[in-house]
Length: 350
Ligand code: TRP
Ligand code: SF4
Image 1 (cartoon, rainbow, N blue to C red):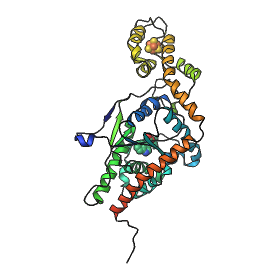
Image 2: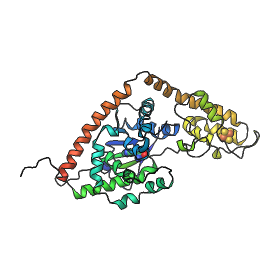
Image 3: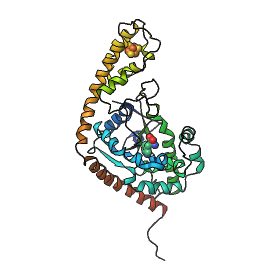
Image 4: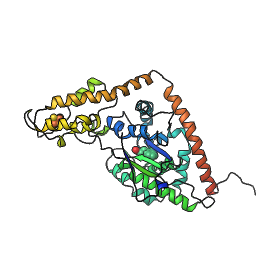
């Protein structure tokens, strides 16, 4: 569904080739349709095109949830069930939890030893988050957030990382850290770490009920698990073109958040709605009812799959434990290569 483009400058054909993908997501609450449309459908598509590792970034969650980490941990299983219901398959991709593969913490610590503080202090997401949170995040872990992310990515020799625009500075830091390591520590004259590239989803941001970006913190989300009555109630309260006060007033779909949902859920009806809105033959209530029906239709299979998963209590555990084993095998070989390059051998003969 979502098209992808690779960020960056001119690349050779070989550099463009997607060999291995790693991406991560924090489990910090229920997922909404923005996650579904922007991220999960993209993961589900990519798993058919390359070897994929999809990770729950729970060590990263610890940077903001450290006073009550268990609150974040309990979101992991429901999030994985959303991933699976959206079509991400353990047969195609390796799905695992970061802290189950201790190599993430290990490589992050090694990277920390040569990552200049100035690189981290000038990281825009660091400054931004610091300015916009009420949590105390003046910690070593939070400053080092991108160092851990660099470990996540390089442990798997990921050539490509599907991420949102907001994560680009982190990917740039990953590249810088990996280049620095390669520069200091070649192995047999070769680079030890793969320099990754971003895959930016070209999917437009999904707007929320109030017309701002859909986000948990704005309380304007349609959750993936909202049932039909909840979905209907939320959509009926959604903002429309504010200039269209009376049913007889012509509207402008370009200024209407409801209309943007037609892009995602009913592109075939767009032209018709556009005309009907502009000449006031279509009212907002009918326009909303029509898109609700389409949204519901898209989400029904998702809900059913999720219900099925809820009946199999052990399934998520099994998937995550076999995923961790598979991930760890790869991670261990990278750690070994890194230690070999460093000359950090467990061999202490005089
Ligand atoms: N920082 C990412 C986010 O908040 C999550 C993340 C952690 C990640 N490790 C990653 C994303 C590695 C891509 C690759 O969205
Ligand atoms: Fe928006 Fe539809 Fe109303 Fe036009 S008719 S303003 S597109 S809800």
